Length: 153
Image: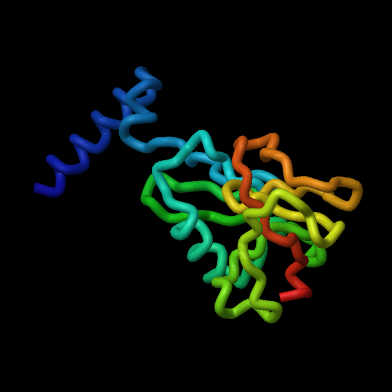
């Protein structure tokens, strides 16, 4: 029985080497879901809540702390952290645990002239010289939250 399993494994390996398309079916490549603190919205087979949960388990409190994150073929998420911990980004701590109890901004006029992060993808935009919120240039969403660094949470 062991000999048959070894022969089947050898056969599959040889076929995969000769037909590269089969390699993607048998062992798919990782999919980039975050790059430089911004969620890749082109790939939506995993929810933001699942991504945030995985990041929090790695002691990450905002998206800017993530250089890259990948959805692996086994369903796990691998994370490459940013070396600087003070970069500002979208907080991923549940609102009940935020120090300032920040709320989602769904207003037309900006009250505090500071950077905000898109709630949908994490893109950070400086609103220090603006009067009204604009749609996100990355995902076209219009819901912003005050951006903060990992040190501020």
